[in-house]
Length: 129
Image (cartoon, rainbow, N blue to C red; front, side):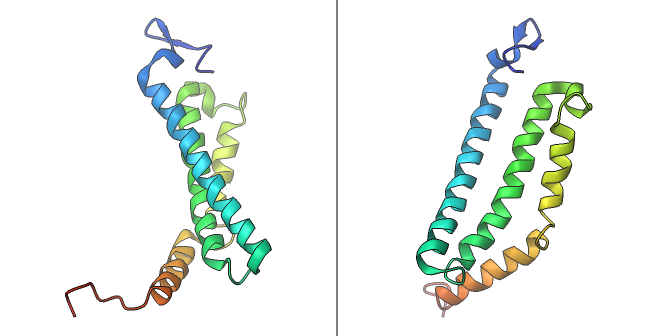
């Protein structure tokens, strides 16, 4: 769509902000893919229990990433991004739902934070205890 839609006399893909959004989306997708692959690899090698932290991290990162990427795509599509002509509005609603699918983000964040504190020992800052 960025290479076919014009705004202010130029293709959207020629605008720096659109290029930045596309680049950010690519980075977000690759980051989410990496954490998912790391979780899957650890599950395969060490079992689900050992991969629990990475699984929780993926459950936090992936739906949030999807919502951001879809939101950027909707922005590029303009009002059409909200129409039934494209799947974006439905995909955005689903991405938002996925943040609740296996418990809200806060549950996964709390569990991950607790596990990280336990793994890394004392919560006392260096030099303050």
